[in-house]
Structures are given as structure tokens and as C-alpha cells.
Length: 152
Image (tube, rainbow, N blue to C red; front, side, top):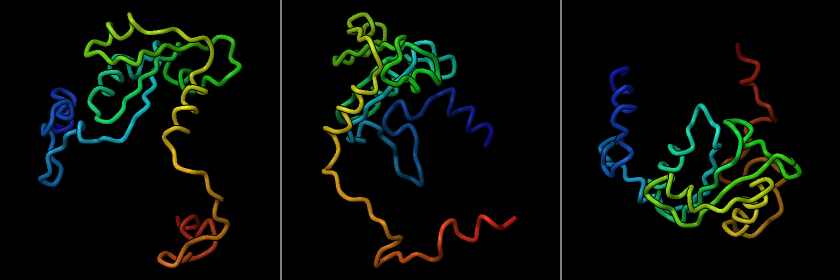
């Protein structure tokens, strides 16, 4: 298993269609046609932004990539009102992350309002939240939090 994991990191089988099979089914991320909004941090030392960008290119569907001005955690936890926040975006995705960056537009402020607008455009109608547990197919078994939390 350790060798398989090393091969996975070395050869990145998800980066080309059919490079990875799960239970005999070849995986092709281009066939994942759900729209995606990807965010990365320009100073991220754990997940370099250009790697996140290249991962975005692997997916099908409408793809959006935004680059925040911070590191691994702060790029995500970057709410509106943060005077240091800014991000860049470019609707034209290039095969080269540096070319995308060169042509990108700089925006002051948090990327959160941008994402909120995007997610609202890609979501269904709002509806009231259910207040009772379960449904006809899956009735509740017991009150929350359940007995499993008491098992040692």
C-alpha cells in the first residue's frame, strides 16, 4: 500500500483520463461536469497555488479560480472588512498558471462576496429548514446525539 501511495504522488494518475481505476472503472475528471469555484492562497506553503490552479483545469463544467493574497489558512479565513484582503481572478483559464496570473485582474477586499454571488447563481431555490428528524424512508432511531457517543 505504501508503494501505491508513492506511485500516486509520483505519477498523479488523476491528471490524465483513465490513469486511475476504482473497482475496474476508469476515472476521468473531465467528466465531472458540476461547476466549480476553486480558491488558493498565493503564499500557501502547503498547497501551492499553481498546483490548485492545475487541479481546477482537470475538471469539466464551468470552472472559476480565485487567488487570495494570503497563506494556507488566512486565504480562506479572509472575511469582508479585512483591510489587508485582496484577490485576483481571470475568467480566461490558460494551461499555464503564470499566463493566467499575468492577465488576471486585481480586486481589493475579500473574495467572499464574489463566492456568495457565484454560489447563489448556482444554487436552487431557498426552502424552509426541516425541524423534525427523519422521513418516511429513514425514521429517527433515537434522540441526538445518539448512544454511540457514550461507547468507549
